[in-house]
Image 1 (cartoon, rainbow, N blue to C red):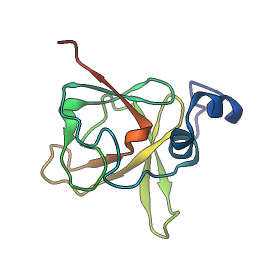
Image 2 (image 1 turned 90 degrees about the vertical axis):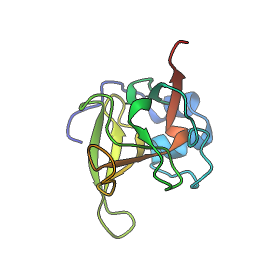
Image 3 (image 1 turned 180 degrees about the vertical axis):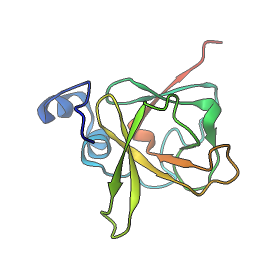
Image 4 (image 1 turned 45 degrees about the vertical axis):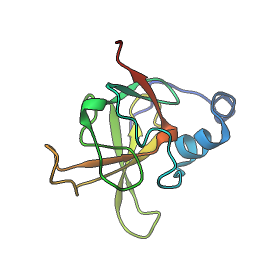
Length: 136
């Protein structure tokens, strides 16, 4: 994460903008409990945005059921929509996924989804995302 985020806010500004659960995940790299996210079972067509800044992150066309307890996608909306960071917090290496616009934590990506076109499982926190359904 060498480059600066395009959206810069102080931590005080983020705290005013986000509720405590959103702040914990998006700004402090927390994780919501598996199976509890409001977007886990969302099936409608639409776009998933960063809850912090509104950047378009994932299309519903890339969402799939991974049975991991969090919404899962096999590819970001655009290659530069997210950035990656090595995370060793749990004592082993994982790849953290952050919003490229504001550098908010979204979740992690794992190369364990051979049933998808990319082989990847972007395991995202519902609280880090906002869903906007397609116009009917």
